[in-house]
Figure 1 (cartoon, rainbow over the protein chains, first blue to last red):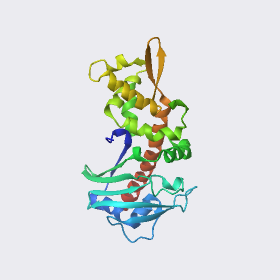
Figure 2: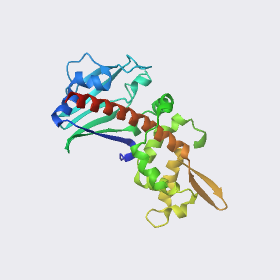
Figure 3: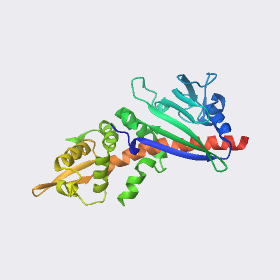
Figure 4: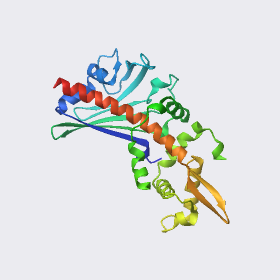
Length: 156
Length: 112
């Protein structure tokens, strides 16, 4: 199955700080936990690690656990992991389910650092999971989705 | 009959169905609103009638398109409910990323 835009999410943000600082904020596990709203007993991220994280997000998922499998750490450039997206929402056994790939890319930009996050592999997810995640979140969804955006604008 | 399938049965097929350039093009064509025949969808000669038929059946299986007999021909149209479901799923994930990136930005910029 060729991967296509419809199976991938891409989000970007400009951060007014040097690349080294942004890299640290994303890959130092203590700093990561701060903005990702999680806590972890692990001392550090390293490629190949299976990292247990606990959500500190207030609400129904508070204190629920999930895991990320670190794939790549290329200094100040690429940080990636595989996981079961939004797995805290369902609390079911996902060990046999395919995972999506999350990739952070850092680039120098005018006045700071451009951070691009892509998440891909949604076509591989178990159908029941998609339906479940859908059902749990419908109310909060309002943002434009990059993948079908082009489709909807072309269709007009 | 694909229309009677539970939504959770077709969601994975939906993402797979959209992961193909030709099918995406057929979806775009159907999204223009008017139901189209296989002849119309293969017009331009880029795709054969057989290929169009095959792709339409994949789209039908994913609940993305449906055919209705009109005289001697079936005319195909888009089933938007399924597309909306796919969109909603990916929007939810996108929103979570937007929120996480906003928190990252705030944390880093406040510390510089």
